[in-house]
Length: 403
Ligand code: HPA
Ligand code: ZN
Image 1 (cartoon, rainbow, N blue to C red):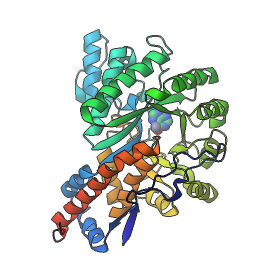
Image 2 (cartoon, rainbow, N blue to C red):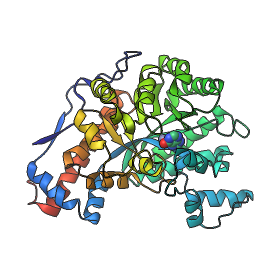
Image 3 (tube, rainbow, N blue to C red):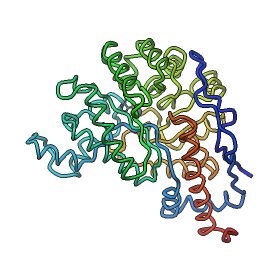
């Protein structure tokens, strides 16, 4: 039997700097979900049928924790806003807009960071920020996402058009409306560009604290990891955490394991954005496994920025086997031209068992920046989704399940 841990045993998500228990588990929820060897075998046949695999994955309720608003804007919205405001852009069709920001072979993180800025004008107006936030949640809903943590840099225009507070309030308004309309629980993470001066990060941290009760749950450090190591921002992140804001940091993507270690030890990162290069240092992997520090993995992004050479050797299963709580994410769906369902399908095809796939999904909810009581409310829907997936496995490849 292969069992999926629905509630993490002991819920011991800790980081060394602060030693604060994030969310003690509540008792009396179903803790395990079992997949039989027959079901696993049937799943391995389904994996080679694109349509069936897609159907199966779309049945899975999912949590997405690493999704940048800037990289998720629909090309059609870019065109509409450009046209409305008379902003000259060279592209005149949705396809051209999509192509202009898509990654090409040989591109790296620095090229990506230029591409993601191409249509920054969509964040100049409060109503547009609300709109793109709403649309991003809507797109996540189409992937059967039930819980979304959406991140953005509220300082990208240097407050020329909207203040940090106005940016956050506009995103919150869009997220709230989307949550009401679409039933996707949505929380926000403010992201700091590591090439900005530390004072800018303090500005964003104070705003995060101000909006903590309204749906801002965390703070992130993003962009050029090679030239701006995490320790430059250690005091800011410590301050944020001491004030109840959760911390996730991009690390181990363009730089190696040392960057991950510093994000954890010096900045108190509770989760790591990517961390895909942690495998270069087994002693770091041991820390991640022991302290149950989650990795927000984004396979297609990693392939396209050159963080990994191929998806054939992608280390998700490796980390999972070590007991590191890995999650699956899109990062920037419109730049990397992917969806969350695609990410799950790619990993399924690369040799994950069904129970491993479900475990990755369960991790997404378990390591969310939500109080345990709110995770608990979402778990029955996830569990029902797992049952529906097993029903589909039986429908496709086995005898019907007994009712
Ligand atoms: N890495 C660094 N900066 C980013 C990323 C990323 O994956 N996505 C958006 N900004
Ligand atoms: Zn990212």
